[in-house]
Image (tube, rainbow, N blue to C red; front, side):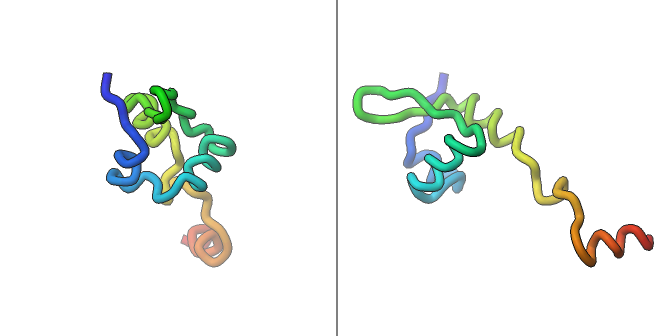
Amino acid sequence: MRLLFFRDLCEHKLVQNWTTLNRWIEEKGFPPGHMLGRRRAWLAREVEAWVESQPTENSAPLKGAAKRASEVA
């Protein structure tokens, strides 16, 4: 069982600040983590599962000119 701390999330370029992280927990289902004394830690497998569940840029629906161009092709 591997634990990640906030600094680990930052080093992995997942998040840059607590404000964003808290918003992801509230709005996007990011794992809330577990308190270890006064520190919060996340199970690496939970974070990895959340990352894999997120839509990628390529899976976003086309809009505007890109959508019209794909309809013509």
